[in-house]
Image 1 (cartoon, rainbow, N blue to C red):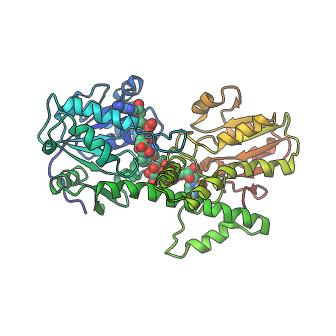
Image 2 (cartoon, helix red, strand yellow):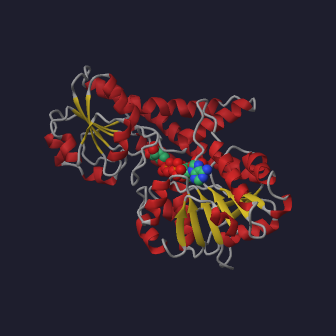
Image 3 (cartoon, rainbow, N blue to C red):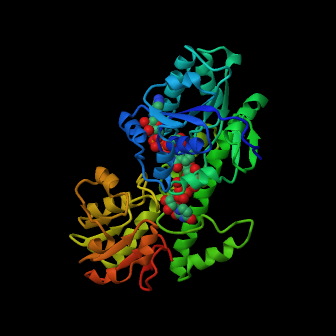
Length: 430
Ligand SMILES: NC(=O)c1ccc[n+]([C@@H]2O[C@H](COP(=O)([O-])OP(=O)(O)OC[C@H]3O[C@@H](n4cnc5c(N)ncnc54)[C@H](O)[C@@H]3O)[C@@H](O)[C@H]2O)c1
Ligand SMILES: O=c1ccn([C@@H]2O[C@H](COP(=O)(O)OP(=O)(O)O[C@H]3O[C@H](CO)[C@@H](O)[C@H](O)[C@H]3O)[C@@H](O)[C@H]2O)c(=O)[nH]1
């Protein structure tokens, strides 16, 4: 367990995206003095104006409480010199072969080293918060810093982040565990100080094991989802309700009821990317990743199951008006990265259908991907005269929909998220 707050720390977060902004704001909420650094000036200006560049429940209020007080944002790395702790929370997007692109990590580490060489607090701790392949902290981040700084003058720690988008603040402030990848006692004390105030179990490991824990946790959760989807596809053939099945299965405490929701598959910036990175890493290590590849394969085919079911009802989709409800990769976010609605809309367009889209938050983001499809301001509007409807995101407002479906031309409703409460919707795999 982390203990009571010993002292407030000066902290810099490199990267002001989902993780950096939530981490920075929550650490300010815990009382630390925090500077968020990002190369994106628009993002920095928005943060300094207390306008979150992303939609995340509760973030706006928290940002307003702290910005201009113990929280600020900058495009400059100068605060690094005054910091006790520097978090690296930049992106690690996939390379074309699925492996993690570490160029942003390298560049952040180089910029930190260039700043610390000018001036530094005694013994700053540089913390890798981004999801990185095993060995990155030890073999890339530390050597980049050590190329400019004396070995004993700093230390590194790997501290993976487990927050979920849409529930990020609650997850950050009430995590199941904190993993601290360091074997150094002094560094461990600094890190415990960062999180003091949180009543959370702490697991201390080496940095490489901490990196592996993050990938393994995501791969396991993704495996649960693909497993449920495969069972769901079978259940549909056998006319069995997969939700009833998974409820029965999940009551076994060794399995747990979580992440067994079958449907259109997993999207987001993490599961697809991290399972691919782990699979690529595995191939490189000479271990053929049979299971991980199957998890990805099920996930690729799952959104297209929606189209297959749709075509059973409407064999010719040409010029058919298809309401697509939900564009975000999950509820309570405006993030569309790897959203399962993207392959579905692309497939509809390929078949000359007319997708008519609605999402409570993510419409603007999706316009960058599909600028020429129709976007509506409500589910009701999208459903008017629709030949069919596909539900792609588990937004709770969709569970309230009822007479809105009366506006459809024909009542073909396919639920990809088990969110509708009307009786005549067809499930994607139930
Ligand atoms: N999004 C999540 O829910 C989540 C949860 C846990 C872990 N992670 C991991 O955390 C990392 C960050 O993810 P994210 O979703 O916040 O990414 P993001 O793309 O939203 O944000 C990354 C930010 O880093 C900035 N950046 C890039 N290079 C920089 C540099 N050299 N200096 C300063 N800023 C720089 C970018 O401009 C961007 O704003 C990834 O490794 C991801 O896998 C993400
Ligand atoms: O039973 C389920 C649960 C989720 N999903 C889908 O899975 C995706 C991811 O959902 P979720 O895990 O809630 O959101 P993320 O924000 O992607 O969070 C995951 O990825 C983060 C980034 O690494 C981790 O920090 C989190 O612990 C991990 O849950 C979404 O498309 C969901 O619709 C399902 O299909 N079935």
